[in-house]
Image 1 (cartoon, helix red, strand yellow):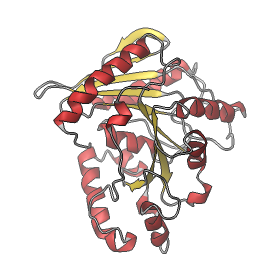
Image 2 (image 1 turned 45 degrees about the vertical axis):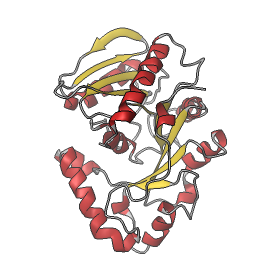
Image 3 (image 1 turned 60 degrees about the horizontal axis):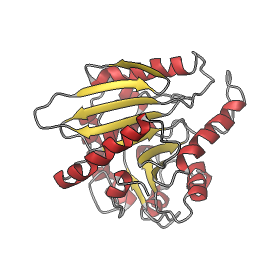
Image 4 (image 1 turned 45 degrees about the horizontal axis):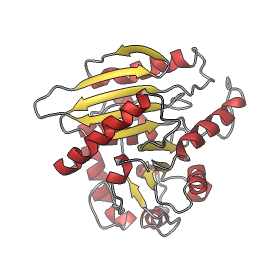
Length: 300
């Protein structure tokens, strides 16, 4: 999990609370509230990025795993305070209180089933809200959106494509939404749909940040092309790109811990620095210039 300064936390916390108060009053459709949306193709690595930002596990797997927006509200608690969590949905006043982070994936999946009436092919615009307070946690509001679908698969109606497109657009067009565009490093960036979607709603590129995932799957001989993307040469973004390596699906199934995955990430980039020609051994290979306060500061 990223470390944030005390000054940042003190500035962010009041705005986080205000944003949640306005959401509770159902004003999120009237006002553009600050938030960070994590969006990309199915199986692009969205869940792993969310885990890297929040330090908590998210449901992951092949196919349409995220079937409704999941709003993650993180607040930093005082040192010595226990981890606490409250889960709810925008369609019900009932709440769930997990005792450990490991309970969250099953809870999110169960609530998704409820909101979509048990259908694997349906989506819901209702939101699962996960509020977490923990020492060392960043003060952030993150939104996990369903993965982009280009063709319906067995058991899915063609309407699922339109439903997802409309849901994603509704979030991305909000002027105070930071767009984390998740892009697998082993795919041709010219074919990545999320970058075009982001350009349409953010033509100046003031709130779009590219995140490259799965660098360990880059084919031999393609490292130079990936390095050109991270260096913001191949497909320039105003805020640039970063590259991370999170847990693979196999590692998830093996129960590899978050800390072990971070150590594996550091080792990977240290060993791959010559291939990617990026120079740094840190996992966040190139840090773009972004005013983090804009992501959670006052709406305007």
